[in-house]
Length: 133
Image (cartoon, helix red, strand yellow):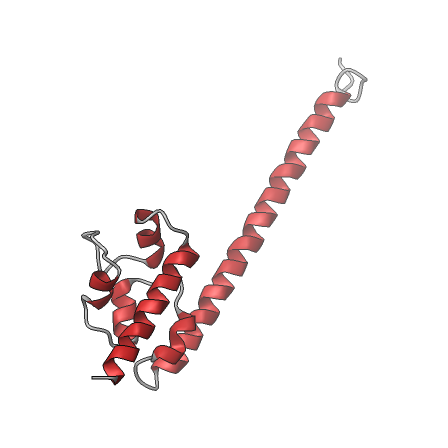
């Protein structure tokens, strides 16, 4: 009968233990990241819900715009005309307005932050032009 703790099997046991530790660390890390993302989304949604309960958002609220938001949602919470962002940002994707900022960013080869910034500017411009009418 072979001794499981012999010199020949020790490297194999160490390798298996290292793999188990690495898998455990990965599972823990993914859980932490997922929890962090959920808390950010939840906090942002609660901020918007609080503001939205007082009527449509305004140019002062563009800092709440996030990449997970769809254009349909943005049109609703900022009370924008349905095609305004599509025309202003030259969005040609047939999924508009049920298209997220993140998806539009991928279509345009932009980062989520860059596309969200463009959306913020477009919303600010809408409010600036609507106050001068």
